[in-house]
Image (spheres, rainbow, N blue to C red):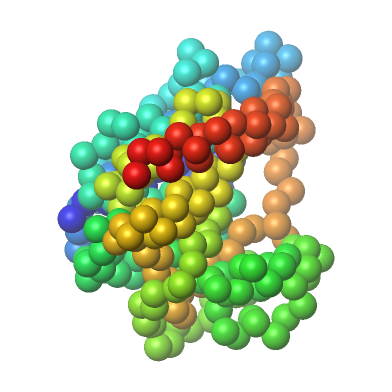
Length: 289
């Protein structure tokens, strides 16, 4: 079984991706299946002429990080031609070109234990559904709809943004893992880059529509598509690895690269484009089933 880890990386995210890379390398001896690391460094959203940092610094560091993936197959790409402007662009291309069995989405702000990958890919080896999603757990988030992927230790914590943002991610992942168990859940709920593994067969069916543009709501789209598939009797399910916790890094998110880069921030426009096309694309998908 082959799993392709797909990452869209902006220049100011490179230090945290380096940290993640070292976590992966620490845990690599426990991984007993083929891994492809597929990363695009997106240099299109910085005005380099107005920035104090040199573009070449990020390219050189990106190339150095690739050397730490000597235990996996690497696909490291530097994009400057405008064909990759956001994570949807990256994921769409990877879905349409991969020959791997699974795709694993990863955001650079996610904090996780070194052994997380080994647990996730091991889970995939025992799932027999035709289409599947496998997710780790996380802490209590901003509303109770996320409780289905929340570790039981955190279910008594208030569900609000303030409490979620105050979590120390390193303190949380430092806790010992006990009683790991793969559990099927009765709904579909996940955040795009939170170490979710999705069967390539599922993603090739749903795809990420071109109309969504560079960024936004691809995870919501896939969740709704899975519900539509379920209604049509297709064999699709989501599982959580109970006891395995990951968390976004908000507490230590201050990023000093941004002080020296002139960033081009089109995220709101990109997301609005995706949201405006969601209903139509879901209708299109429903007609395919």
